[in-house]
Amino acid sequence: MTECFLGGSSAAGKEVAAEHSNVYLTWGEPPKQVKEKIEEVKKLAEEKGRNVRFGIRLHVIVRETEEEAWEEAEKLIQYVDNETIELAQKTFARYDSVGQKRMTHLNKGTRDSLEISPNLWSGIGLVRGGAGTALVGDPHTVAKRIKEYEALGIETFVLSGYPHLEEAYEVAELLFPLLKDEKKQENKIVGEMIADAYALKK
Image 1 (tube, one colour):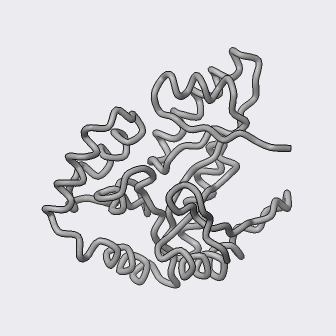
Image 2: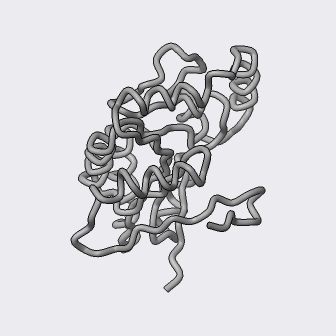
Image 3: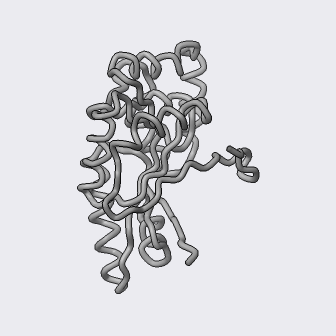
């Protein structure tokens, strides 16, 4: 059966998702904010006599040690200068997307405090629109954070990393073995879309 995934942080977006989606997908915000979204959309769906499941969109940076993972995170933005960050933030400020405004608010447009929740890093969102947070850490810590989201009601995790192929291997080898699902829902590695049209092949 084809399933419909919808996201949206605006009141209108949540209404549409509650009315039409099978899965409401949120970007990677701190657990407290994700919990609030889940409760709100669930209530809206129940009022319409519907049941909606929940998913989350996150980047992942996992390494054998915490130190290695955080070093890898810093490498992603080490050549991004303050002028580029400022330009990107000005561009994001013009968007009317509530979700983008929430992402921008998380990093506050500076490098000063990018770990916005334990192991949740907002550095990607300094210059990238859309999903701008990553879970960063060693395999057991990242698995623990994922299970914390799962405990809130998240069933589907849409994960990615940079560079795509190399990070897919890191996640498959280090993280997936710790996320065995008794319900036996298969973990799948798929390509990211390029220019919203062509998927990368494995």
